[in-house]
View: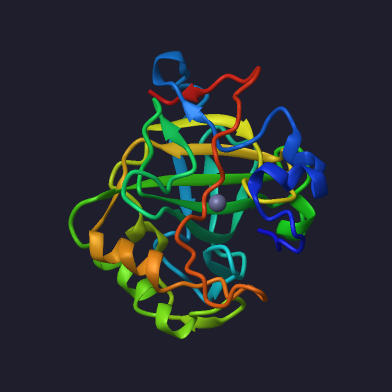
Length: 261
Ligand SMILES: [Zn+2]
């Protein structure tokens, strides 16, 4: 979502160069399930268009120096429903992980973290592209999925197997089209909703967050591939692993968190 081009790389210092990062509606947050407000009428199921037919869309796998991102070149994948007032086009998806299984996700549920979290980033179709939408109110809708350690997940292999081709920052390669629906958990009607921000600078408070209840399986070996095989290759720190790429929790402040059921 951004380039970190300053010496203030640590999240605590982001607000110096990017004032929005010090705002009152930042992400990620801890979701306290007991305080979530149930609103099934508002939070209807999503309709995911193009999630199971990649069409003529190109997928580009990129190491951007702080995460692994799959850029979706084309407008064939979009979501409606889910309490959104418009259709939102999928632009890219990426992952946040940690050094060990006890951390890695950006959001937490009742104080508990997951070893990895995937964000599918969409923008309101009334804008020309993601950059136009990124700083507009409700311009961005992110679908967020947690991972739990379990069985080997074959659906992740087309991505993980290509990591050796993108070891360093700014490396990228075209991958075979994959069906996004195959990456997702079976049940998609349970999710939390709140209004927050991008979790990387410039931290615009433009994001409608949907955090799904059901996690995705990943095995330990696959998690290790994220931790060990992707490097930052910063100018003064050659080939440092990207072993933690999540932003710490931000205060919820005045906001409510809704849930679909
Ligand atoms: Zn993210």
